Length: 239
Ligand code: PGA
Image (cartoon, rainbow, N blue to C red; front, side, top):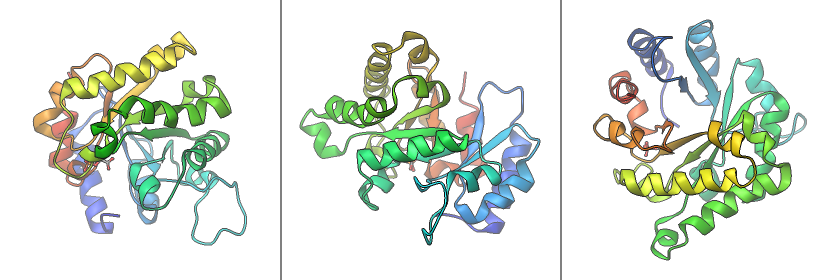
């Protein structure tokens, strides 16, 4: 819930000027809903994709205040985040709720970015893999593995989001490898092609080392995506 029309315009102008279609990374932005139409008008035909930050699991109907996958498609979105930790912790989305949103995104023709990750308490109790496995199982048990050929996973340790604490490259790599192995057990080809992003205090100064890990395919960036300068420092760290 950051930004304004002026801020989004300045940010997108900066990103368009400072990135290119032949860059090594794919670039997407996830503005708040009121700014999706601005993103659509500024980014259409460019190399930068955009997406929503959540969606309602229903396709349409009397759901005052909610936004459907079809509406996001109508705004030109390619992606939508599902199960961001703030949706889970502040707005009470259960693993099952997240799975329904994941499916609704696919049904609408969007690529869901499924966010998973443990809290500090869960990490300290050595529950990281158990929690991440449970969050992934909620989707694969309901909808299978093939749906991940049109999806992205973001590993975001809750204790690292917006806190300035970053998982060490090795801590992140360990969980990313766990996720890829778990998906490999269901389908090796899909697991190999799956993009697994790391999120949690990614910034220009730590991005290169994170992205150098073999199972870290990119970043999901919060605070450092709010100015073009900070975001482009991360984009520039892709080797
Ligand atoms: P952060 O946020 O980069 O500010 O830690 C990440 C996120 O909210 O996904």
